[in-house]
Length: 191
Image (cartoon, rainbow, N blue to C red; front, side, top):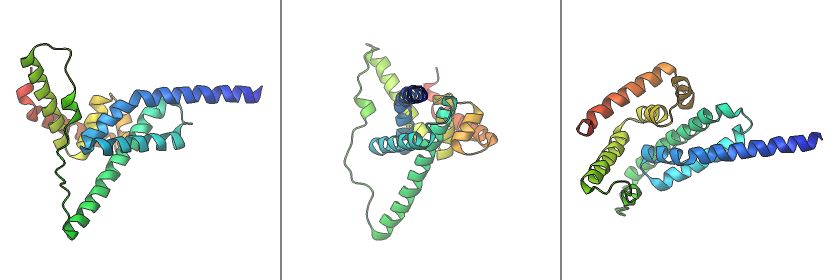
């Protein structure tokens, strides 16, 4: 009976874990893509964060999973920035260019808008989305993290502080500065 009960608990945990990962994968991918600007690298970071989460923290209470997962993802993004900075220093030293001019098209721009038949409105929304993506991308990393976790994920200050590995005061400061900057950059799209 004990082994059967233990197996049922493992299956329930596995199902809950699968639901959790399926629920965060798209948002986590978009967050990583906004943060680093490269779709392939973002996918790798999210997959790496998911593997790290499952291998180390699946046994934690389900109510803690969201904050733990996003802390892992934010650490992966920060590590990516550090590795990229080191690579760029070596490239500059050896005279290699980071610009390969491959002309990749933004996948967000290729999605058809089926909700609005009005071309002017569609263009306005496309411009607003592009401006938002550019504005978020222009924020410093910590402000971007705070904004994405608070506004996009809906985390409270304590959860965001845990996910970012900083104090609640730092979260409030970064988030406030991000919102102020975004309001200024997106003034023309204000309703």
